Length: 278
Ligand SMILES: Nc1nc2c(ncn2[C@@H]2O[C@H](COP(=O)(O)OP(=O)(O)OP(=O)(O)O)[C@@H](O)[C@H]2O)c(=O)[nH]1
Image (cartoon, rainbow, N blue to C red):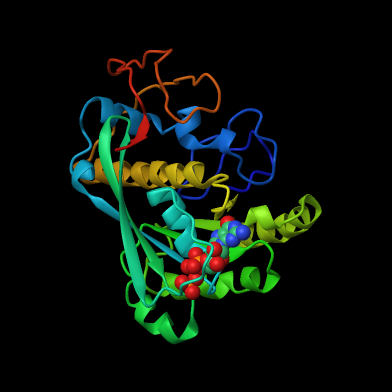
């Protein structure tokens, strides 16, 4: 998320009512700001999970598509997260491929289906037939190739033709961070943030070679997608109960949260991990 002011409340549909965590004064999203770390799921969502009012969310598989120019590192990004592997040899994706990942968010099972799509022009028309029904779109560019950043707008436009722009979550991901010098990275980040702002996408910079930010990024995708699904379920069931925010402090930036420090008013606090891969 683009955060020009650390304490502003976001007004677009995804962020409405949620404040940026204190201390997050940077322009691009840092892992300290991640939802699952700071435990600022919307109160309605936390409460619904604790009261087992999440309907079919636990049985659902949410589709996430990964798009971007050829060779920007889409396959490597998914493989780093799902298999913890990295292949330095380039093998073009032909059409599409997908991986399933299971999580547990606030005690509720949740699955993501990560669709790796081909960046090569000749496979694009096959890949685009799989864009439909995505809950999140990840647009990848190479941090060392400015043209790949420029092309992200077209990738987004194509993906949005098949999806509802008002409800889909957007992520702009700069890849191959290990290949940038700090000075090069700062320059590219400036441009990337502008593009992310225009797209209303959350910006992340990752390296699949070193693994930097990869896990944090996908946990973030899972947490936000989960939250949107629970809210949709609550809308469907007409639930209007609002609970207090339950804040679970993690010792550091540890992703696995352990104990609740504050009890919500509407439901008992249940200690346990908030977001885990299973
Ligand atoms: N140094 C470095 N190289 C990377 C990184 N990610 C990917 N690569 C390399 O970049 C090349 C392309 O990676 P892929 O993941 O296959 O790219 P892709 O976007 O899936 O390509 P298409 O399938 O053609 O769309 C490979 O040689 C990878 O080893 C990274 O984080 N760091």
